[in-house]
Length: 377
Image 1: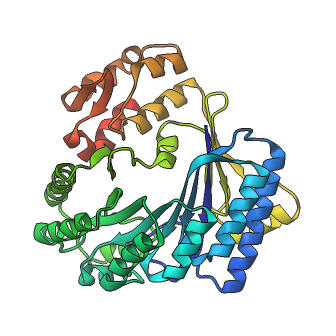
Image 2: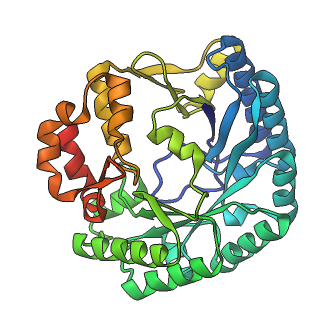
Image 3: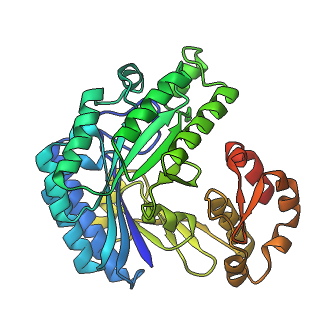
């Protein structure tokens, strides 16, 4: 099984909390970038790094919904021609509510997109403004309605929590509104202050206060309780899904399976040897220069040895409800997980649960994940 991630590094404007690679773009730049993506895909196909048809494709960013339907269709046709797309492949496009129209959504679905991920973040107008989102509450609701009317039956909605000054009642109102819209998938993200972002600078200047740890935990537990009560499976730290609606693409990441990448700022993982991580530098000029000279734009980030691969396996698997499968671990690495991580398992045992033989963290374990996972690294 193989997958591919496309990075679309353009936004209408950058949100003050975001540290992903993105820049403002004119229509001409978008057209040129699509040309580069198709060239990148052609070179990737020629390298034969992937010989299996793609099972998942993910348009991420940035704001992929700045691409029009014709551009998305061109990219998908290029992928099918150069690499191959498996029948029934999951093809996701991230979209911001302030950038889409009914016509554009209909075009995306005709082009082959069969899963939409909408960055709603909040239904509270005041919070949307503080987050610097380009859309308002009405646009968020309208975009969801347009997606359904266009025929989208696999819709994921993003929601942020632990916002400055956010109360439990405000979060509960957001969750009630979210559930009333009946999405198939929900991703939740606690606000973080990433180095170099405007929000981090405001934090350093004392102009904004982070959510206290106890309130963060209270809000996370509220989310878990409300969404699981509503029938969602909490299958990863930040992700909930209706039955059979997990994000297949993200599971490729957590299972350390091959995921190819195209686009400036994109990251790839190759399941060869003990694994290899590569990236494409987040620089449009260098990306164009490499491709126009027929060069591979990716650069090696890390080539794993056996010990490093075992650590990353644990790091990724314990983010998920499925956790560490002892049989799979021993098949991959030739030793029992209990032997490889005996001291770590002892240190975190109060937060471990056994589910069909697998090791996973409980909810409180996920709340202190960074602390617990340090024992495995």
